[in-house]
Length: 311
Image (cartoon, rainbow, N blue to C red; front, side, top):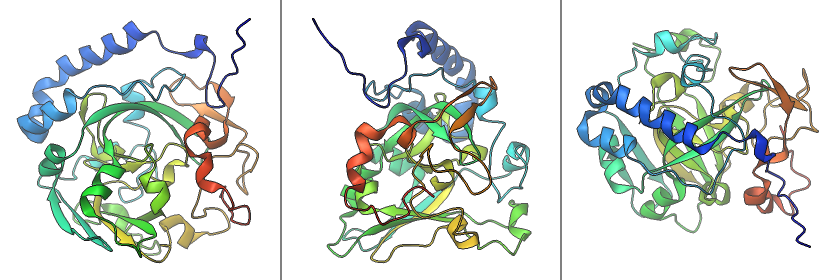
């Protein structure tokens, strides 16, 4: 008798979206948006993003969130504190866009975004996103492994952490007027976390260039961590020796720590993390340790029992 032990990140087969629906819907979206994509990012960028092959290794085990829900319910404090910031975020210019790679690297460089698209291995991955506010979504992201960029930059031996810095453009970001926040938005992770294959630099979603409200034109997504760890609209990626203090950690370290790994058994000081509300459906489902990606990342935290890994 064949006995199959399911992996910790898996959900039942009945929870998965039928493949013809997923791929058929994606193709329809791409066809409908083709002209808009070309106008936004140029023919080369549109081809790279819209034509990216899906990596089948990372199956979310859940339906993909409707595009209209994933792109109209967003946290982006540079544009405001409500979830409808997608309206004001449209003022963010997505081209030209330059991201600086610097710090403890042997090959520092300023990349124009289109040059980055041509230089990196572009693919699509369907990842979950779990917000610390206890809601979640599933998105087909287009991008490339952060590890590919690290390899091109050449980390120096003393590099231990990666620091991500978001754009701060007062002319188009009204939220920057809230001077009590420690702008610019900064996030970080260890070099080992950055090198993990799940760490993904995102340039697109739903077969299109990444819209500004979701962090376009370039964001970091590490799906085993709470969503606030994913810095949006990145302008600088630095390798450093000292652990960076992240944006929310600087504001309230008792609630938002450096690691911020998803754990249903460790509540936020003001609410439970045991379950999550699925964006678009309102369904409540149990939250999984590491957001269901423990098979890929649990080994990163061996020997770190004294660290506050879950906040």
